[in-house]
Length: 256
Image 1 (cartoon, rainbow, N blue to C red):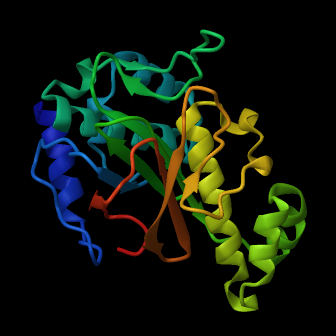
Image 2 (image 1 turned 60 degrees about the vertical axis):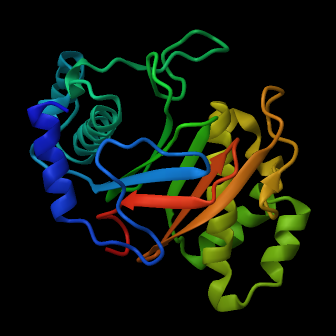
């Protein structure tokens, strides 16, 4: 790991609180079979992020208006590169992040480190950036903030399958917004895994079970879905092509 990435990691670990049921993972150890690593960081609070970006990313950051858009970009790219340096033993700014879409060859696909064995996915809210990392198969992750009840009432009829709507109606009134968001986060995570995003017609995906047997792509036989406790009005869902039994986290994120 280079000096800049090491400094950012030290800052990150200084703010970590270990969530119940999780443990810290050894520095540099990639996820093992059945394991997913989560990295979460608050947006815009680590001044070292800019130093680990590649030159072209620094240029792009300087072109974004000051404020949330720039802070989110810098934190997201900085965290991705810090994570990659940790696992791959390379300088953070020298890592090549590829985003080429396999369907149209345009640079808007799911991110990956060129030539690396690990796979990862990125999500963010207005306050947090979250990464999920696996060493086997593919991963998608979503992080969302629990919405107001009026938002649930507006979106549920069109964005949930009939089975999901029935499940939601059986949920206690006080828990309905969180239950809706848990379903939505699972859909988003599954769509990110496939790289199709909103093109995956997520309104038609039924995610009430732990395994999605009919993913929105012919290249994946099944997608395993996992809810991760986040706290503080947030919901996290992870989708993987290999079943996950253990989640470990660098987690100065929601609930810390």
